[in-house]
Amino acid sequence: MKIGLTYWLVDELSAHSISSQARFGESLGFDSFWLPENHFNEIALPDPLMLLSAVSATTSSIKLGTSSYLLPLRNPLMAAEQVAILDNLSHGRLILGVGRGYATGTLKAFNVKPQEKRERFEWCLKIMLEAWAGKGVSLNDEFTPVNVKPLPIQEPHPPIWIAAFGPKALRQAGRLGLPYIASPIETQSQLIKNLKIFSNAAEEAGHSPIETRPVMRTIFICDNKNELDEIKRAMSKANMPPGLETSQNINDWSIIGEKDYVFDKIQEYREILGITDLIVTRLRLTKVSDKRFRRSLEQIVSLLA
Image (tube, rainbow, N blue to C red; front, side):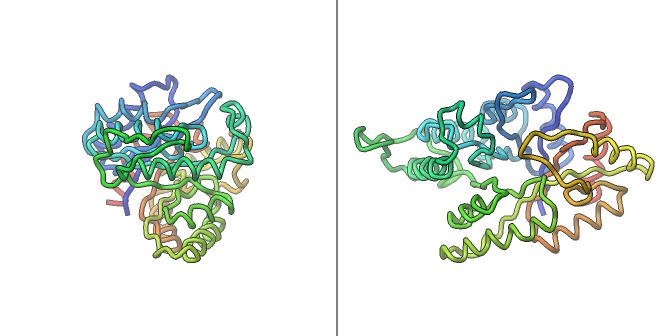
């Protein structure tokens, strides 16, 4: 099983701080480093590809992933070019996680009708795949087809994973035959149901079993029960954006405890879900300092070595 980590919030979020986090993860032996895409809020990261290009310049081996690059917001030809450039800059280290977007306000701000986001997502992905295959592509029949240059280093393109946590999105990912990134906000029992929905859709579409199974989880190793209780009290009071609410039972969607508990719980996830990529997040760990979180990351790598 490979281990990745997402960026985490610090007092000053910048390309420098994000690159520092990626270098730290690389030094510990994490396999991948992930950035989301979000807009118009206090923690906005509107262009993960641009930020990952900065990360690529200061790292050498860690894979660079977008946990949800929002295709409906984009011109597919430009997106194909930008993804290819980042894959070249990083010497073939990109994993492209793509999504449709859940925030209605964001979709409308980019002049995308929410009810059309799935159709637009698929249209965009189709054109990007054709462009990376070296085909001449056009956004409509009125324009002469063009060829995208440069092409990605990874042939025919970087790995594509789909961020999905609703039944429609899961069925779409399965029908397309692409791995899906399991959300950090869903319970273990919901992930089991989701995997079944996804796998059934893939089988009905004639795809072979999809072996890549990435799962995002909030993971933290506590020194003792007192620290565990304090962290859980703080997490229970942390607010989440509309549409990203979690179960009230923190154990349903996170793995937080002392070393033995965390190890056993991760093994349980592996056995039940067949996880191939475990991506560590810091969701709702608002009262944990940067220094303390880094120590937990060190412990996680040591625990799973």
